[in-house]
Image 1: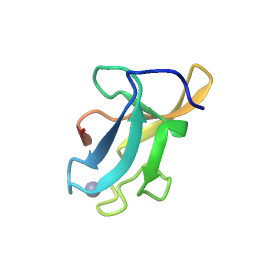
Image 2: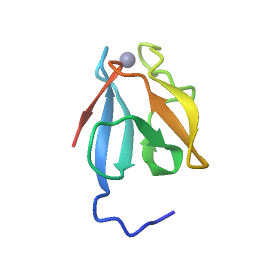
Image 3: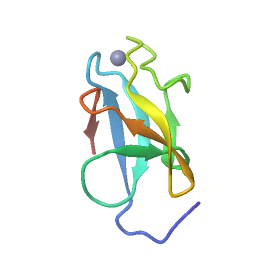
Image 4: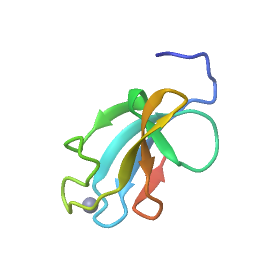
Amino acid sequence: MVKKNSQAYTIKIYCMKCKTLLYRYKKEGQGHLVKCYKDGIIEDNTKGDLKCPKCKQLFAREAMYHNRLANKIIQGKVYVRR
Ligand SMILES: [Zn+2]
């Protein structure tokens, strides 16, 4: 789903514990990363189980936002780079 949103930009989401790249994600809008909409994930290096593929740390939980499936980030488990 492509929306006209000049605020959208790509970020990389890493495991806080072992620094593995988990997702490349098209983020909408400014502010702190709270959730990843599944349709915004460009590259998924996990097995889709919301755990780091390397250290097996759980970093997110499935949730629904505005009728869109999302991964709600568990704060402190990941860090983000532009
Ligand atoms: Zn990890």
